[in-house]
Length: 62
Image (cartoon, rainbow, N blue to C red):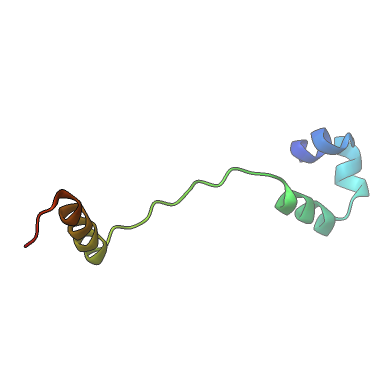
């Protein structure tokens, strides 16, 4: 609620009594936020492929 008050300049009283609840929910959903980047899961096939590429670059073959 304080985010909306700061962004729009509306009073808290107006937000509580003058704005539709669904409109407030949409405003909060559209608000910018930080989303953490997910790490890639390493799979066995990814490990094997990366080792093969590394071995080829070093000139080693198995």
